[in-house]
View (spheres, rainbow, N blue to C red):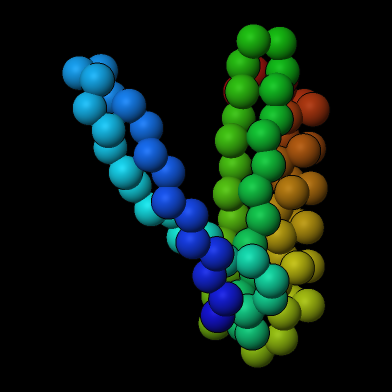
Length: 82
């Protein structure tokens, strides 16, 4: 697994410096698929993340994420009340 590491330094409310490290993955991982999205409707926002692991093949995970996306899309289009 490849990790991209970034260290950020910020000034807190007391004027002190605070450092924190962020590590995130990029690229492909065998047996793992993920996706996220932000949906805005009027003044409302829905943030959605889907993570799938233990896959025998990544293509099946992509299909599952697409199906979940279609279900959420259909729900939002029919209710518009999220």
